[in-house]
Length: 198
View (cartoon, rainbow, N blue to C red):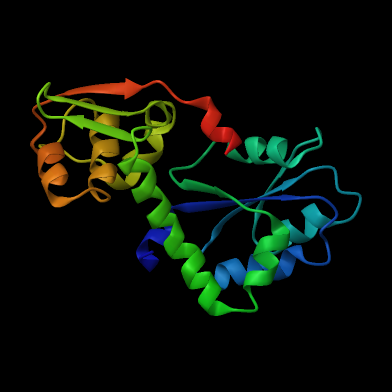
């Protein structure tokens, strides 16, 4: 991933009694250019929240136990950023190998590209002059406006043009050109909730 894109990532870290390691992890993330860090304290009995805040992370609290619940809390009131919910134990090991960090960050772009190449992320039907994108873009579309808003290309509202501009960075040149010309109908795909269990 291009370092200039790192400021578009919000790292969400659920914690439970992680006072001993959370500062090291926050400092490591900052050292590789990830500065939007949101720690979600999930009922710690130690000083996890206080030391995370002092290290520069935004701190939220989620009293209901569970990693998924803490991630969900971290996703609330999202800034204009791409969320990345990570397990502290996994991040903690990456600081021992900078090559893994590079691979880890590059995988973000790869996963976006793969998802958009699937029928769950993006469908382009030139015969019907229609583009369909995941409902996730409708739900969180404002997250792309700050960086990807554009006039004179794509189709739809400001939010929709921003989303399509973002998507155009992950498709082949022919699809990019088709999306940019903007003379098509835009629809949203029904979200396949079974994807969450994969």
